[in-house]
Image 1 (cartoon, rainbow, N blue to C red):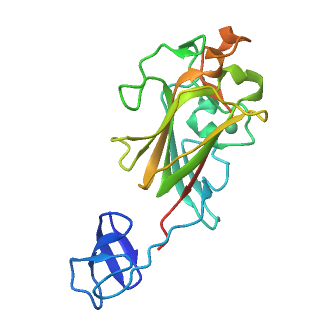
Image 2: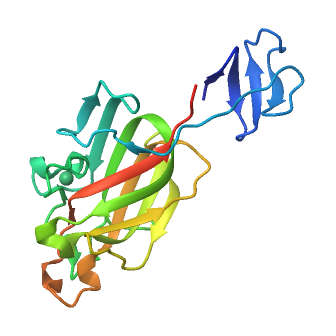
Length: 235
Ligand SMILES: [Ca+2]
């Protein structure tokens, strides 16, 4: 990783207050410095306010560039484990005018419980949606909205993972109980000290698993929207 802070560059990043600095006007290259207590200067570490990613909910394809926004501009990439059809692929979870949203392949779930073999990390199975952001963020919270006409197919028990290489994943959130609010969303806060460029949502059980009504319809993952909130590092 490489960061630039004021008049010198951060070569290695140990935690939020310790860095190895190089290319500095007044510091020797390779010196380890502290955020507020340094031998040469004070590094001001800052991060943005919590913001929504992507900044506009207008993704129309698996590789979509957002321009003209004050933050979060650049390339957004999405992937999905299975899909019902091309218009309901992973990107549609990030397009709010499309209430149908992401729709996985049929019969991957039985009465809301996952029966397939897809995963992000092998100890937790489920259909999944992944997104790659232009810049890493520290995930702070999320919201997931049902598709109004197919609410029993929305995520109920799920995990959220983060990655910086789209290969190795860190578990950030594990929701293992049913919780939906009256305006058809579930949400949660996430405590994470790391910045990640990729996020994955893996769904093991659908609302229909706990619902007495329309339980039989819960045989595919389908939801309207996934909102991601986080903070990015300021330069
Ligand atoms: Ca949508």
